[in-house]
Length: 159
Image (tube, rainbow, N blue to C red):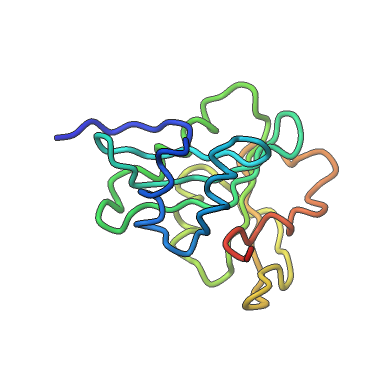
C-alpha cells in the first residue's frame, strides 16, 4: 500500500488537482500554490495528489476553509479528515470556519464529525444558485463575528 500523507500545495500538484477537480481554474490553482493570500493542503497517496483543502488566513489565529475535495476513487478513506488535522492540532489557531451550502448534507455531516459546529446561516451566499450557506466553526467565533465571510464561500465562482 502506498504511503498517505498531506503537504502544502506546490505548482507541481496543479495538474493532478485538475484531474479530480476540473471546475477549478488553472490560474487560480497556480495562485494558491504561490501561497500569497490563499493556501492549500494536498492529500497524497504515494506521489499522486488525491485531495485539496484550500484555506485563507483572514486574521491572526483564524483560518477559513474555502474548499475541500477528495478524488472520488479514494473517498471515505480518511483523507479529508487528514487534510483538516493540521488545523485541529495546531496551537496557533483559535478557530477555523467553513461555509457549506444548505443542500450539501454530506459536507455538513463531514465537518460535524470533525468537530465543527453550525453557528450561523448566510442568506443567498452562493452567487450561482442563490443558496443559503451554513457557517460551521471549529473552536471559538472569530473576533468581530462573521462579517464579510460570505466573500469566501464560493471559490469556484471566479472566472
